[in-house]
Picture 1 (spheres, rainbow, N blue to C red):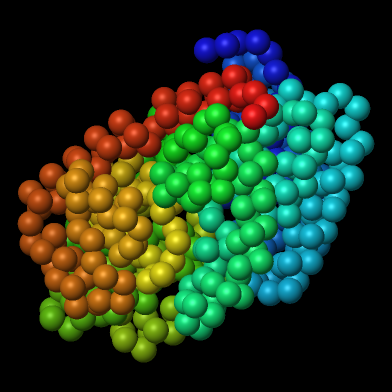
Picture 2: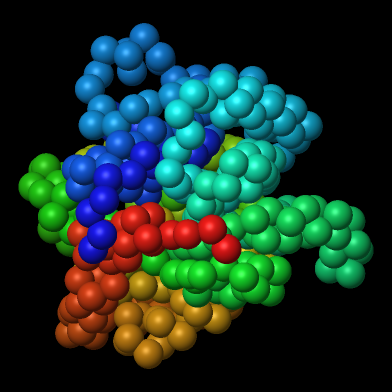
Length: 408
């Protein structure tokens, strides 16, 4: 690896900082690049997207970070979809542009998360104007990812979103190198950008050393309980109601010790809690936990639920790295071909159609009754985590791109 020290500007509006809930890709990359010897500046937002709260900047200013930290003002918003979010993101992009224009010493390389769209566009233009190598890290494919929020036919949705699709293509074309959290997302960018020197899929993954160190915290679990567990957001893209219906059906059949453990939060929490109450379903809504609190419950679970809605564009998300690290069988309703193929080829569990509570209940019952099959699926999952999802090794490719990227 080329160890020439570089000034790296890392722009990630949605990142989590150390001490906040979650375990994010970009603060991890910033820390590791700093440890290698690079001079890193991490630029993020004053607003925490997941929690819909503003950061306590006084508290942050009193903590040590191994990199330079810049917090850009954002207006904030209450819901994931709405005009207030649009205005908030526009304000962030405007303030970010002002920050970039005021920099005295230009960075050697810029590494930027996508989305936000507007922020990535402004950063990409700045990079081109000053002939700075520009790396895009694709976390989600906007506008495609919002299609399932619009409850209208696909042809009309595609027409309405077409201007945003063109905008996305303009952003993708700015990149000199492209990193993405899955091959599916990389393939989307390749359709728009033919000149980038690198197209590198690197799963979000987890640091297995840190993951394993979190397992020791005690968690109360009755000896006869069987847990199917979900970690993540409660919103349009996640098919949590089907899991609730499935465990309700199993309870009606006499499986009183099967519990659906839900770690997370989001705008649909109220309706999910109401559904569980209406069906008398055995669901434990645990709220949004810190990573260190989440891991002990996950590793003591029996099955992991990758509950993704029909039409959602998610590919290989944060939760997958944690599920496989925990060595759990996976029940997957994502229709993303890349991940469906992984579940099948690596023998991790079962794929099922989103919304099909009967099939899901049958899969849960099958695994409940077959501890050896759970062991096989779980061992395969952990092996995959060690091979493909351990940031300690998989992110080395990202560091190499940062150190060797050049202008396209």
